[in-house]
Amino acid sequence: MSKFIDYLKTKSFRNNILAAVLTVVGLLLIAFFSLRYYTKHGQGLNVPLVKGLAFEQAVQKLEDAGLKYEVDSVFIMDQPAGIVIDQDPDPNTFVKDNRTIYLTINAGKVPNTKFPDIAFKTLREAQAIIESSRLKLGDTTYKPDVSRDVVLEASFGGQPIQPGDIIPVGSRINLVLGDGQGNQEVDVPQLVGLTVDEAKFSLKGSNLSLGNILYDGAITDSANAVITQQDPMPVDSLTKVAIGTKINITLSNKQQ
Image: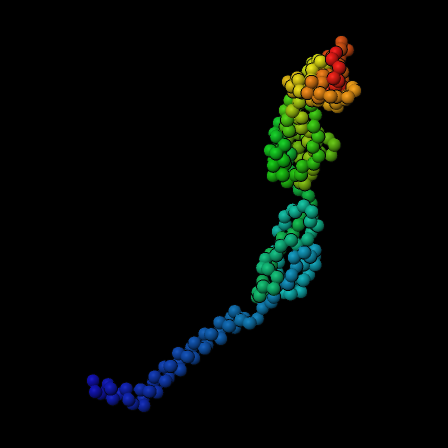
């Protein structure tokens, strides 16, 4: 054991240790600089901003920077055709030269879609279906029908449209809805001789409403004033009116 300890104290041992350390450090330095060279560390490019440019301008800018590109397309309404709407990697990202930049451009041709079936859907349901088909809700009009706010007709460009018809994405669809009243008619009630409260009760039961109120002379007791005239009157030539019609009355304290 004493001989081994004596050997550790010799100059030969120290030289061997120093040589081993220098060899390891040398190998590490060689590996480090080799890796830097292989990966071209410290060399590269900042990705230019091409989002928002026309496709031709974007391509020229990337090629001038020594970058490759690949293209995909989508369609976005209200955006110009042929414009770069997205890029990957983002602008000012540090990349190696000859890196591929992925571009997304807005398609130049408006795609088509099939018109969905919205017949007899409520307005809210129809709007959701229309928008999910990448269409837009246009004007809404009403016509007499017992169904309220239910789609009766749909049109595009002034022409009726049926489920499955092919139309451009973003088209405006006009709808005709039911008004909930239909073409029903009711008898004109006899209001002459009734008070205002009695007349309102009678009109409500007939799905009619009170119109203008005129006064015949001074009304001293409005609670007991009676109707002396009404328009329209229930006569042989007019016995029925449409639901919702307003009935005008004349009030007077004079009993008929």
